[in-house]
Image (cartoon, rainbow, N blue to C red; front, top):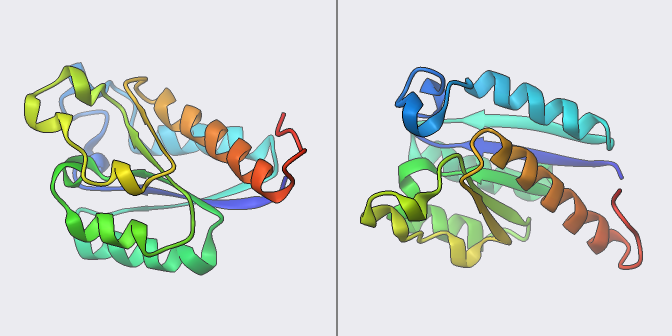
Length: 155
């Protein structure tokens, strides 16, 4: 299956590997993206990525995904819990979005238990560290394959 997926990362994710390693692990964003690209290539999926600490740039990337991507893997970081602007941007595009988190947000501080974006996303993957992105990729790839051909399997 040939398709294009945007891996979109929000604030502070550029500091992965050095930021709160007890929570987020030691993998850098670059190493996570390299793993995602390798896994995607095995299935003919092209990956492009955007990371920004700016809410507006993340919104712009989502808007651009309408014509540039078949799906989005999105870790909105702290914006998950309060950005109605990102929620509205996700709701305004027809591209499926998988909300993705390294940590199990439900096992953390209470304010992290609420996501304002989950309701407009295809699904949520959280708590598997760097592998969360690979799980999100597999789920999104299978969803897109099923959309393209309801009887097709995305092996």
